[in-house]
Amino acid sequence: MAPLASRPEAGILPAPAAEEGDAPRLGRALRRTAAMLAAFLLACAALLWFTRDSDMMAAATLLSPGVILACLALSFANYILRGLRWVLLGRAFGVTAPPARQMLYFFAGFALTVTPGKLGEVVRLWLLRRHHGVPYARSMPLLAGDRVMDMVAICLLALAGAALTSHYLLVTAVLAVACVALLAALTHAPLLLHLIDWAERRLRRAPGLFAKAREVCATLPAIGRPGVLLPALGLSCLGWLAECLVLMLVVHALGTPIGLGEGMLVFCLAAVAGAVSLLPGGLGAADVGLLGLLRLVGVPEPAAIVATILVRLATLWFAVLLGLAALPLALRRR
Image (tube, rainbow, N blue to C red; front, side):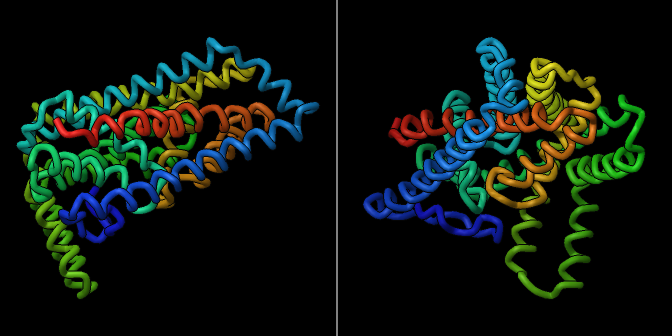
């Protein structure tokens, strides 16, 4: 593979490299992923072992195989819907790779979700270039649009959850502003360009980063059209709503049901915390945020701990496993 250890957050994309020097880089990233997965599972097993006679273990026994399979099915539905959105946005940006291959690359990127530097997202762009000759100048906006669509959908769902609960008015106001700002960025590229110019004049550094940001902004009108924006937002909202239902299903099975509004608000705010932390996969930040928010809405501590573990297994680590299965297929030449 191409050297993927470059820093995409600084606007530097992987450069072509000889095949013989590529495998060690990918192997190192995959070994790190496997180590983090093993550490997470060992920590969960140790926690359950040391609390085997406690209320937490009693809560865990309430989870039937049917509930776990339903959670995985909902998470898989989320990945499929977001993969379809990836194909839709790619078509808007002129990516001509076959839809089935684009879906495969989208799933393969999940293999590196918990590696630093958004490596999983960058490897999708590398696969498009390796197999179909799609230049990074064309695929980079696809990555940016995909991320923005996720954040808009999560903020919209959190806003709907706050409105349904009739509480958290300050949270509702902040989320409303965030939604307006993100949608304005997608539909009013000139406004965003003015903001980038203003920030560059203030900071007076990193000209390459600001130049890359302008290139991305120049492509935003392609997805700001209603024919692209509305279907993409619809797929995004349905996908993340499925993840909110995972949380509600688990908490309900543990005997402490929460309303739809609370489920949407809790899951989406935890997802925002994970994204803002910039940690790979939101590790730590999203987990602590989910646990704390569940306690805040009245879920008992044992049930909240079990729910956090299962929800993260279903919504994060299940994706990693799917990515590890898809990556070898994605690396094969057509």
